[in-house]
Image (cartoon, rainbow, N blue to C red; front, side):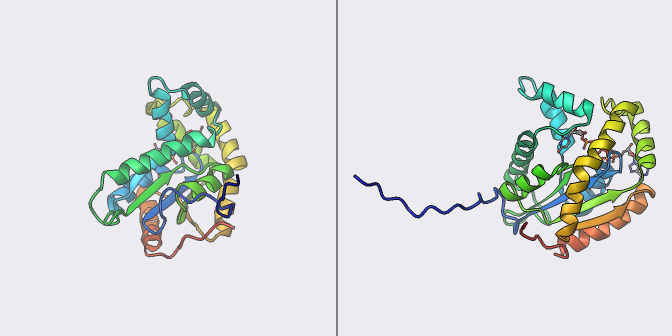
Length: 229
Ligand SMILES: Nc1ncnc2c1ncn2[C@@H]1O[C@H](COP(=O)(O)OP(=O)(O)OP(=O)(O)O)[C@@H](O)[C@H]1O
Ligand SMILES: O=c1ccn([C@@H]2O[C@H](COP(=O)(O)O)[C@@H](O)[C@H]2O)c(=O)[nH]1
């Protein structure tokens, strides 16, 4: 007996969220560049849902019964990248939960949504996988400043943050990982015309003005999502 099957077409999986409805803005920059601070301001301006990959990982690390707790703790302390499957699943779940809440306000009508994904993708494998399976990103906000500025900010933050990685030794490791793993991601998106670089050396207010202008342009489609090649 022969079993008929349809033609087998080797197509990539379609993303979980449609990028014509769901806007994903990646937020990158070195440790302490000011990503989280600026995301907070952009949420107020534009009604984004702000998802920090680091915060999601720290919450998973603390969650009772998590099978990834120890792995996440080690990676964070050593400044290395948690395997992408864990981070991408946490982000996808958080996006689905935010969309299910059916928020109101600009950018959330008719099953739409807008997300600032902070501190992600940190490595090329994450970038490719997220764009392919979760949602094609539209723009990357890249906050750039010097290591000296970042180190100073992190050491000040470390006095009160309680973060295991805001100390001189971890900061050094995080800078190394940033250069080896994250800079190639920024180069990749630069080639696709998706990167808006913002100098974040200035005061929070000044950086916010620049970031706000870029995001306004991005939401008007200046950085249209391109298919990765
Ligand atoms: N423009 C700025 N001028 C001075 N201090 C700043 C500025 N932006 C942020 N900070 C301070 O620097 C510290 C790091 O900022 P923030 O947490 O936003 O950085 P981040 O890029 O999200 O860091 P990480 O990647 O480590 O989470 C915080 O204490 C914050 O208050
Ligand atoms: O995609 C990611 C994002 C973060 N991590 C790990 O978390 C820490 C802290 O991240 P912050 O953005 O500074 O809060 C980072 O150093 C990595 O160890 C990750 O693995 N993957």
